[in-house]
Image (cartoon, rainbow, N blue to C red):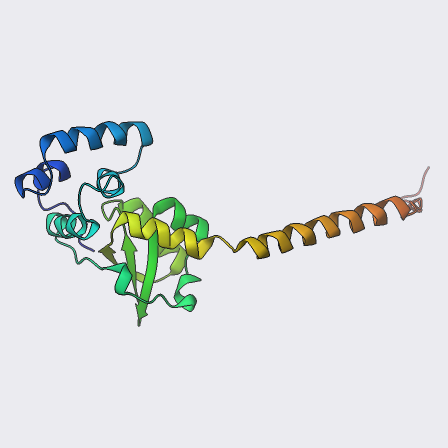
Length: 188
């Protein structure tokens, strides 16, 4: 697992050096980042200042890790079930494929080794992290993990029906007194 950063340069400085954004655009994105709490790459893409593929390429070079374009990738539903949806949403990661004992995982932040350790414990597989664009990754995760509206309605109806039935059962249930247990010890 190569997770150590190759250079100490910040993402914004690298993007300015490569001529992808200006200092003014960076300062606007940094102020937006402070207000939202999202990563800089996500904010830059959301504001339309730079293409997500460019940010992903820069991060891949910076961390010396492979990058993946999720728009060209088909995710297997069996592989998706290997990682809990809430964990994937919280840490913005997506399992992509499994080859033998190795699970390839697309991540927005590959430097978070604690998440990688937790994921390795959950899946019991060796991990191969790759960098993916956070904007696309978030959208893909939200579309995968959130059920369609019709099934949410169905679940809420099922839940309400169950609650009503249980409350009726509870009200009609007669409480029978339990027989007292006799002590096995003799009184003297």
